[in-house]
Image (cartoon, rainbow, N blue to C red; front, side):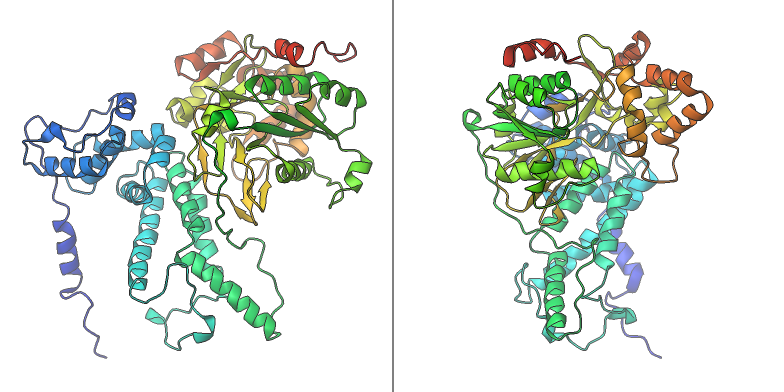
Length: 584
């Protein structure tokens, strides 16, 4: 059987020849070079690009031409963005400078939040493509190549759509399906029940989670993709809804979309305030902690300028409610039987579900501008007045993700440890800091690494989770991880607290294990309980959680130790007065 002529004359030899012509290396003129691998990045963030490119004004080298082109693109923007573009331009070609890939890796390892907040989507896609060619790990290369194929094919078919007369957010009419076959005898995507889109996106998301350097970029791009109102995934979702209605009208289907295939939330206008003097923020918490701990939590956030601290008492305690209610900026809700009887749902068995429920009710009813859903052992630690930082938040971001730091037990003043990544190290640092247990701890923490969110209020259909937000059933993707607000987590402030909560955390709380493969924290603690009992648990606590001189020195030497005095007793005295004598 005679084969049709190839789409590209000359076939793949011609394709490869054309492709390789685009990869000739950039030539540097006299005195021209990329910055060294160890360049200080902070001045590059502070200095601004001069679009006239005076640095290479008289040069005619190919490097200078690219430098001038990027200077025009990034005029008045931070020089770090131009450096990022220069690295990509070199890495797309053969024979780039020897340290070029390592410097690109360093930028994303140390400054991912900064880059994600300032690069447009086109440059982010270029970065993910560069990871595909020059990734330092197999995960980076595989994910970079997979996402490159995805975005490249999107560019091709969305360009073709421009000539179809259809708008990017205009779904095709499902009643006008052509009888023509798909290329290469492929079956068509099943609009009513197909999972190709979910499987494709879900696997890419999971792959990204395996590598801490590429994860922020890949997750951000995928979030942008599923929230874009004008793309193939959104159009197929709209067409799925059309098809479901069509089948229901015909009596052929009454099924609902599977739980793992939620409808994509439509974008909503974000309420934005940029004047710090008018911004009112607050916190919401469900707790059964003793009064002193709740008072410490509330007083700390009142001292930071919270307009309201909302406390849901999971276990009714009149003395706690009366004491906290002395301050008019503290709202106390006692979640007793009568209160739950007045809710739309009965009291949930799992405390995590109760936490999400009450936080969402608070969000829907609040008159604040921003609301943080945090626990009573978590303390916001902003670098500046929080209202100022919230006023400066990008207007297209619905929430700020606040990274956690973990308090060292017994530290006075309070000391907090960071993850290696926050200090610019990789996970190989963990066994250096925690010699016995480091290889089995996520980030060296015994508590969560996900952080918590402070969200803009006034968004209809928004639901607050423990570490997440959803809008009309879909994850909220436009959230920005920040570095100028930390979440000080007093997860194990002393041995007694750690031991008292251990059984609950192992069975119903944060130490539960989500997967069966890796030997994680739950396995470590189970092994110690079984083989060494209290002695083993105490050895674990002393190495990982306690503010011992040895641990603090190892952390300090690696830039992983932060001192943030909380002055909690003084704050309680200021905002509430003396605690009742019966309070321990």
